[in-house]
Image (cartoon, rainbow over all chains, first blue to last red; front, side):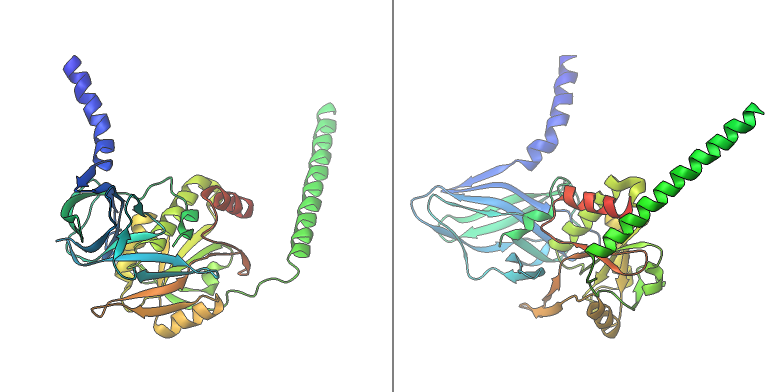
Length: 159
Length: 198
C-alpha cells in the first residue's frame, strides 16, 4: 500500500520535477530551461531560461547550438509605441554581469531555434549546448512545454 | 372567462416589457452612436484564400463578428501567444462568443501556404480561419486595416517580419468596433468581447 502511495506521489510530482530542473556550471547557474511547444508546421521555436552569474567577474553567453535546429540565435522582441512587433537578433554577446542574472522569458529575450529538424513535443527533453566565454561549455536539457495557459499578452512589453 | 382575463393580462405585461426593452436598446444604440462621434475608418474590401481553400471576402464578415489578427507562422513569440490567448478567450466566452469568427491573416505569403496555415491555426482552435493572399491581395487588406508589415532580412538568407500586433474587432455591419492590444490582460480582453458579443 505504501509503495503504491509513493508511486502515485512520484507520478504527480513528475511534471513539476521535469519543469524545474537547474544546472550549475562553474559560477554560472541555469534555471528552468524550457521550449514552448511549437505548433505543427512551424519551423521555429523559442527557448527560455534564467542565467545567474555567482562569480566575481562578468561572463557572456557567446553561442548556443542544438542538433535539432539548423541555426540558433538570441533574439529580442520589441513592441514599438505604435503597436508594431519587431524581432531582432540580440546585438552582440549576451552579457551576464558578476552577481547578476539575465532572464529569457516570453515577450522578451529568447533563444530562437530556426530550421527545426525534428518535431518538438510537450514533455520531450532536448540537449542544447550553451557556451560561455569564461565558464565554458555546458550541455543543458531543455524541456518542451505547452504555452503557459496563465500567461497573458501584457507580459510582452519589455525588450 | 376568468382564464381569458389572465391571458389578456399576460399579453399586456409582455407588450409593456418588450416595448421597454426596445426603448432601452434604442437608447443604448443612441448612446453608442453619441460616443462614436468619429467612427474609425478601418476595414474594407478584401479577397483572400482560407486555409481550407475557400475564398473569403469582406461579405463573409457581415452578420458575424470578425476578430482579425495579422502575423506569420515563422514567428515564435507574439503570434502563437496571441492565437493561444484567442483560443482561451473563446473557451471562456462559451455561447457568448458564438458569433465571433477569428481570422489569422499571414503577412508572409511567401512561406505561409494554405496547407501550412491549416496545420498552424488548427493547433490552437478549430474556430480560427487562416487567410492567405497574393502580395497584392495582402497589400489591399493591410491597407484597409491600416496594418504595417515589412520584411527584415536576417543572416543566411533567412528573414523575419515586422507587423502590427493589434487584434481588430469588426462588427456585424462590417464596421470597426474596437481593438485589443497587447497591453490588455486576459480578463480585460474577455470582458470586452463579452460586452460586445454576449
